Image (cartoon, rainbow, N blue to C red; front, side, top):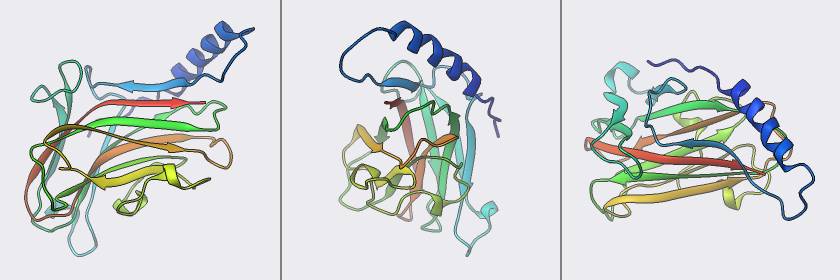
Length: 210
């Protein structure tokens, strides 16, 4: 598993430069970029994780996460996630730590690739933005949930179906916490619903804050 090198200090120093450059400007609030990830370089700042329900040990769940040139929404690379479906269960994801600064609202968007369109829910895309790093499938939002519609939710995120269209599709959510979190973690991944093996790709992850 690739270990994360925290980007907190780098982002914090960058935020100071940005705010200094904006001093004296008057106008509508601007959104600061916390992350723009296209997986064009190694996964040094990301950790890989997996979880399956209590009926099976994690060793029974086959999954793999790696960079790939097979599909790309932008650039040449994306994140490839393979999940087996033998257990109708299991979630695989990556996570990274961000610097929230003094932000009071956050927006996240990303591109997800599915091999085919399906009227059945084969897999869900899961995403999380909040003060603690997810360690289990249950740490992500419930099926069909999106924090955009939940004022002052304890964390941001979504769990929405993949395979709504063949190829790339954009997903997004917003989060307005009750107060600025002291720490901030982003996690994105795939959760198994249907008993079939599947490979998906994620790309162009953008996190902004205001």
